[in-house]
Image (cartoon, rainbow, N blue to C red; front, side, top):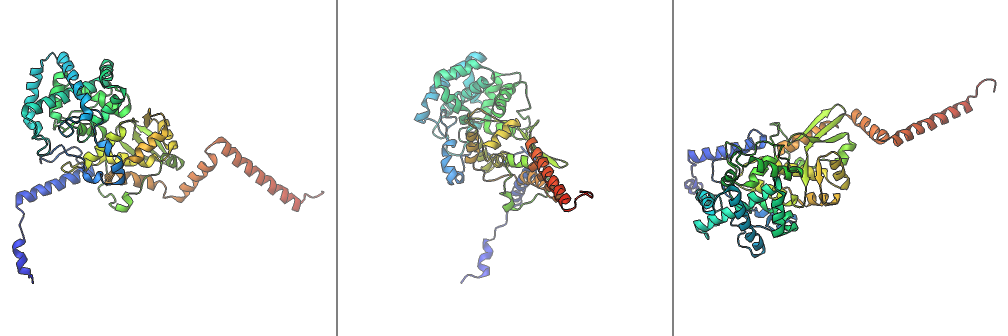
Length: 448
C-alpha cells in the first residue's frame, strides 16, 4: 500500500528562472486580452505553425478543410512540390525575371541578398520541415516564392499589366484564388525574406506603399494608395505576411477590466442587423478600423469598419482564426471577435442588404445569400471576452428601461412608415367617431 511518504520524493521545485518565464507569459496573455498590449510578443522562439488539429475535427472543420490548403500556388516548404500546383512553379520563374528587370539586379545578386537571412528563415519553420532542402535549395525556394508574392501584391496595388501577365500564364480563376493562397497559415514564408525583397523593390519606403495598397484592396475592395497607415512596425518584425495583415486588420480597442467571464453568456450572439435596426440600434460605417457602440438617448449607434467580401474572404478569415488559435502566439482574438459579431449580424439576405446600405459591407459575389453562406460556414471557437462582452453589455443597457422600450416599440410598430402612421391616425379617428356617436345616441342633445 502506498503511503504519503512514498510521494515526497516526487515533488519537484520549479527553478526561479522557469517560474519567472511562466509568470511573464501569463502576464502577457492577460495584457493582450485586456487591451493593454495588442501586438507585443513573448521572447520565446516562434515557428510557422500548422493548422491546429482540433479545428479540422469538427463537422464544419472537415467541410472547410480545403480552405487551409493552397489551390494555385505553394509558398514555403509545407506544400512544396505538389503536382497540382506545378503550373505556378513555372510562373514563379517569370516573376523572378521581372523582379530582376525592375530592380536592375542580377539573379546572383538577389540570391546572395536572400542567402544572408537563410539560416534565420530556416528557424522560422517547425523542426524537421526543412531538412530535405540544402541551404542552396532552400534559398532558391525563398527567392522564387518571395518574388511571386511581391509581384502579385504590386500588381493588385499599381500594375494592371502585371495582372494581365498573371492572367496570361495562370488564368482568371487562378488569380481569384491567389490572395487566399497567400494568406494560408501553412503557406507562409518568413517576413524577413519579404522584407529583403521589398527593400530592394522600393528602397524609399521599404515597401510600405505596396503593402498599404494590397491590404486596402483586401479590406475595402479598392487599392487606395492614398489611404495609408503605418504597416511596418519599427519595434518588431512580424513572423509572416498573415501576421502582418492581421495587425493591419485589427486596431486597439478600449475594454473594461471587470468584464463578465460567464462562459454561457459568452456564446450568446448579438441580434441580427435588421433586428438591431428595429430596436433603434443603427449601424454605421466607422472611420477607423474598429467596432464601437455609442448610446444616443433613446437610440444606439453601432459603428463597424467597412470591409469587402470576395471569393477568398472565407479562406483568409479561417486562416487568421487558425493563427489566433496556435500556441506561442499571445494575442487578443480580435479577428475571431470581429467574425463572430458579423456572423451574428448576418443571418439572412436582408441583413446583408442593410449592411450594404450602411456602407459597412461591399461584395461582388452576385447574390447576398452567398455572403450569408460564407459567414455561416466559418467556425469561431473563441473570442476576446473583454471586447465581445463590452459591446454586448452596452447594447443590453439600452433596453433596461421599460418606458424607453415601450416608446421605441410604439414608434417602430406604428410610425416607422407614413402608411402605418396614417393607418394609426385613421384607427383613432374611427374609434373617436364611434365613441361620439354612441355617447349622443345614449344622451341626445336637448330639444331633439
